[in-house]
Length: 68
Image 1 (cartoon, rainbow, N blue to C red):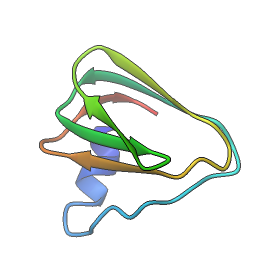
Image 2: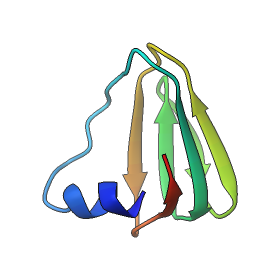
Image 3: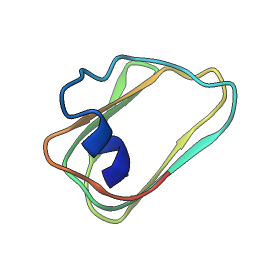
Image 4: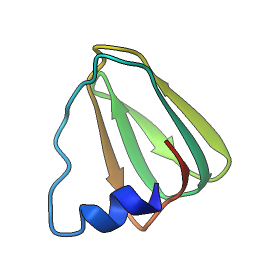
Protein backbone atom coordinates (compact mmCIF):
# COMPACT_ATOMS: atom_id res chain seq x y z
CA UNK A 1 0.00 0.00 0.00
CA UNK A 2 2.87 2.37 0.72
CA UNK A 3 4.01 2.11 -2.92
CA UNK A 4 0.56 3.26 -4.08
CA UNK A 5 0.66 6.20 -1.65
CA UNK A 6 4.14 7.28 -2.77
CA UNK A 7 3.19 7.08 -6.47
CA UNK A 8 0.08 9.21 -5.97
CA UNK A 9 1.47 12.00 -3.76
CA UNK A 10 0.77 14.72 -6.31
CA UNK A 11 -2.43 13.16 -7.71
CA UNK A 12 -6.02 13.01 -6.53
CA UNK A 13 -7.48 9.52 -6.15
CA UNK A 14 -10.64 9.29 -8.23
CA UNK A 15 -13.42 6.72 -7.85
CA UNK A 16 -12.69 3.83 -10.19
CA UNK A 17 -13.49 0.15 -10.74
CA UNK A 18 -11.68 -3.02 -11.77
CA UNK A 19 -12.86 -6.17 -13.50
CA UNK A 20 -11.19 -8.36 -10.85
CA UNK A 21 -11.34 -8.87 -7.09
CA UNK A 22 -9.21 -6.63 -4.86
CA UNK A 23 -8.18 -7.37 -1.29
CA UNK A 24 -6.58 -4.70 0.87
CA UNK A 25 -4.73 -6.02 3.92
CA UNK A 26 -4.25 -2.90 6.06
CA UNK A 27 -1.56 -3.27 8.73
CA UNK A 28 -1.52 0.42 9.63
CA UNK A 29 -3.62 3.20 8.12
CA UNK A 30 -5.78 6.27 8.57
CA UNK A 31 -8.44 7.59 6.25
CA UNK A 32 -11.52 6.45 4.40
CA UNK A 33 -12.16 3.76 1.79
CA UNK A 34 -15.25 4.47 -0.30
CA UNK A 35 -16.80 1.33 -1.78
CA UNK A 36 -19.84 1.88 -3.98
CA UNK A 37 -19.98 5.38 -2.45
CA UNK A 38 -20.37 3.98 1.08
CA UNK A 39 -17.72 5.20 3.52
CA UNK A 40 -15.59 2.72 5.51
CA UNK A 41 -13.04 3.89 8.07
CA UNK A 42 -9.48 2.93 7.14
CA UNK A 43 -7.59 1.93 10.29
CA UNK A 44 -5.12 -0.62 11.65
CA UNK A 45 -5.50 -4.40 11.24
CA UNK A 46 -8.27 -4.51 8.62
CA UNK A 47 -9.14 -6.39 5.46
CA UNK A 48 -11.19 -4.65 2.75
CA UNK A 49 -12.78 -6.69 -0.03
CA UNK A 50 -13.76 -5.10 -3.35
CA UNK A 51 -15.55 -7.19 -5.96
CA UNK A 52 -15.34 -6.83 -9.74
CA UNK A 53 -17.28 -3.79 -10.96
CA UNK A 54 -17.55 -2.14 -7.55
CA UNK A 55 -16.58 1.53 -7.54
CA UNK A 56 -13.97 2.39 -4.92
CA UNK A 57 -11.69 5.21 -3.84
CA UNK A 58 -8.99 5.30 -1.19
CA UNK A 59 -8.62 8.56 0.74
CA UNK A 60 -5.59 8.25 3.01
CA UNK A 61 -4.76 10.84 5.68
CA UNK A 62 -1.22 9.46 6.01
CA UNK A 63 0.74 6.73 4.27
CA UNK A 64 -0.87 3.34 4.94
CA UNK A 65 1.08 0.12 5.31
CA UNK A 66 -0.16 -3.25 4.10
CA UNK A 67 -0.75 -5.26 0.95
CA UNK A 68 -3.04 -5.09 -2.08
